[in-house]
Amino acid sequence: MRLTGDPAPGTMNSSGSGNFLLVPIPEYPLLDCVPNKTVKIVVLGASNVGKTALIVRFLTKRFIGDYEANTGALYSRKVTLEGEEVSLQIQDTPCVALQDDAEGLYCQEQINRSIYWADGYVLVFSITDHNSYRTIQPLYQHVRRIHPSGNIPVILVGNKSDLLRARQVPADEGETLAASLGGVYFEVSARENHEGVHAAFLHLCQEVIRALGGGNGEKRRGGLHLARPKSPNMQELKRRFRQVLSSKVKSATTI
Ligand SMILES: Nc1nc2c(ncn2[C@@H]2O[C@H](COP(=O)(O)OP(=O)(O)OP(=O)(O)O)[C@@H](O)[C@H]2O)c(=O)[nH]1
Image (cartoon, rainbow, N blue to C red):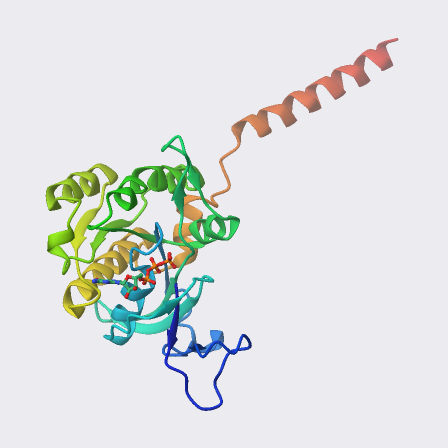
């Protein structure tokens, strides 16, 4: 979801509904980015699980609680991680949904681009919604298809832990699933607590930095998915091609 707030004078949106877009987390100009030290995170999950609330909680320490349908906002911040300044970019996304067969996913193209772009993944479900939990495994498989090789820094977040009475997903199911994805499980409440949310994002940032090999995005891009594959076959093909050509030339001259 996209962050909204109460109307303020002169800030009505074009629909005139009274909602307006807060700009709580201004992006800093790209020129201001720390060169080669960018951590790109995408937050993914089913509808209404609290993706926007978590991002806003992490970046502003606030819970606003009233949001508008997500359009996929990108939030940027400079943060200090392990003593180093890095540019942190967090991509909010529209929701994904399970297909009727419960294995495939409805996933907008915009989300695929975000998955491709990102270095680290926050997979969110709500502990009060078992269906949102069931989307996580197919969602992870989807990320894997886009990044078929290499280490994928990921955390699993079970949000809305303040709603214990409505719990549909036990904590140990979250832990087991996270372990099977190679990540850590965080059960948090964006509504009630900043610390848990902060710890979750911080952990992922550290994992990303580690995967990037000291914070150099280009390095990881090269290492994980944009690496130009070594191409012995190509070399071999060229060699054979030359061989064939020269044998043809030879036979031509012989004749
Ligand atoms: N009780 C409780 N409510 C929460 C929590 N986090 C978010 N919410 C509420 O859940 C609803 C959905 O939150 P969003 O952050 O918009 O969820 P989203 O995943 O971005 O939603 P989509 O845009 O539909 O994908 C809002 O009404 C929030 O106020 C939480 O930790 N506890």
